[in-house]
Length: 123
Image 1 (cartoon, rainbow, N blue to C red):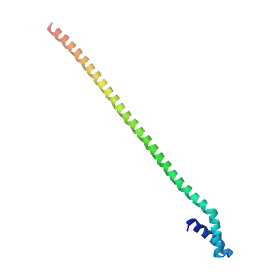
Image 2: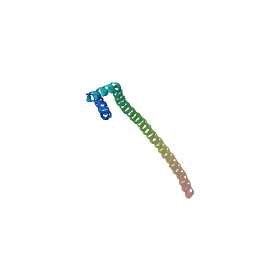
Image 3: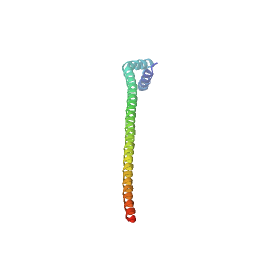
Image 4: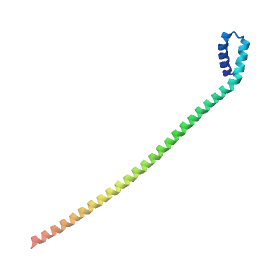
């Protein structure tokens, strides 16, 4: 027997026991009610299963979309980190070159001063 028919039979039996209906009448009433209500209950059950499936698919899709967004952000962050490393490396090279230039100028001036002092001492 269909579980919905059993449900309808129980409900009709409970409602008709007090009225003194015979068992055959109760079963006939339950069958008549089931003809009307049964397909609707089956449709409701199918709709609920479809809704659960749709909700699960929508949730999975949202998770996939969020995962893709996180991956995009991670890629952008990695790219930005690499770019910043390149920029800092360039700045470091530039500062190193400037420091070397300053040291060279100091050495050049020191040499010129030392040379002048030696000439003055010789005279």
